[in-house]
Length: 312
Image (cartoon, rainbow, N blue to C red; front, top):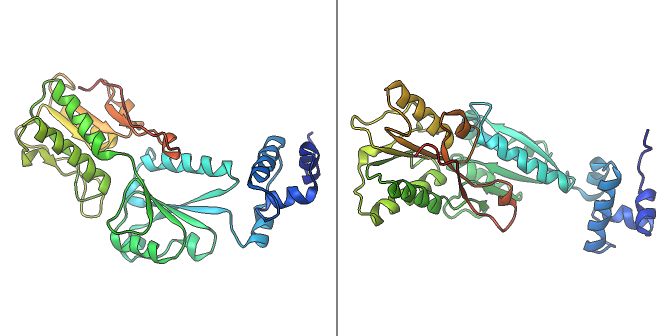
């Protein structure tokens, strides 16, 4: 059995003192950033067990990040934000930081109650996945704790946001349908629900304008209630030939409804979505979708890509 790796082992590997190793691992002053990173890399390679509890006592930091998700976004086990949170936790682990996922209930959201991980002083910062009510986001901003919004942004917010180019993606996806000869195209998504849904709609609308296709208001189809929860899709009496859905889950539900009506996809109606989630693979044929590539969103070289052009 492999013996426990100690700071001495790391020091011997690098030819430095145990004191320097201790300072690097506890993020204290006295070593350069370059040496600090090298020590942590060697520690990880050798299998050194980081003692975050001890580090917390010395630095007054918890080495935990809270990941907040509204319960309305996780009604099913294949929810998009479960995948996103997994990628975030995997990235945090590379820095020897833990991610604590907390589900924000409807009651908490309505009454703007701080997350438990904050109240119990368990985290050093917060990541909010998916847009919550304005009052709740204003409360997050008032906590005076480092925070970031993911997949949405809010007007005049002082908190940074990480978002894909939803406008251009909606524009590109709609132009793809138009290039296939479609002139009657609907958008499925409640445009007041989130900034991402709204930006995708605006990209869709710009493509219609540029191609001199009039916007039919009956073809802007709601998919969520006032609380952001998904609702059954109510199709117009006259069906369009194509649908731009704001996410793959909605596209999947739409395809099931079209099949119940005896419509074939893509022969009778084309359907496209966003996210490249598991839902895009559950239909036959698979859904044409935009992959925002969560892994690449962690770097500066991020681009969105179209995947599986089967439902157009």
